[in-house]
Length: 254
Image (tube, rainbow, N blue to C red):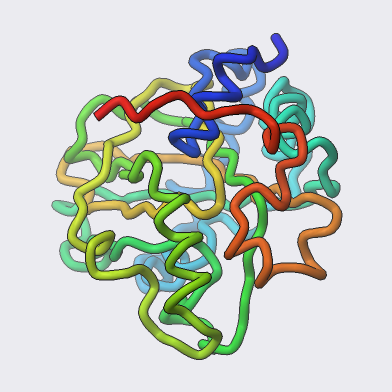
């Protein structure tokens, strides 16, 4: 189903759209099977800190059954509905939050951030930004203490203003102080649920205090012009979103 006018307006306000059950069970099962086998047979605990910064199961990043979570579902159609047109997506980021009881201290809570800007593991002069984050749930996430992603609805507007007025390349702070103090809203869901989130929405992720791994597949989607105007897109939240420019956002729900 294409985006409704109400969904577009809500995305403009919140920077987030959630579609439940968007990915068919047979598609999720194939990806889950691959990642579960990798987790059980190939995960080296010593690699967890590095994987947490980049991707787990890097060997599966371009596997057709994992890419299919985006390329062969309506997730790609929804992304195009928000951005107008998109660059091809050729890799997947797999993020697993390992149960804390199994490997204590290897995955501390992440600070509030937007991806690819002033990341601790990157050169502060480097931008690795994109337009839209698409996340597909691959495990039951029904407890906020289970390593759930936490996002700040409407934070994309605050971040764009901060990037315009106070931030410059080389600054190591990832978000302004008022954002850093926020807890965010936990994204809970079941396999096949999909989160579409504006790149500028600040988010974090906590430790997994449940007995089960939390598994998400993420796709970083860009407008074709994004790579040549990364800095401008940090300061203008709708530069990469032509279909939304003329849509008025509804009033805040707060």
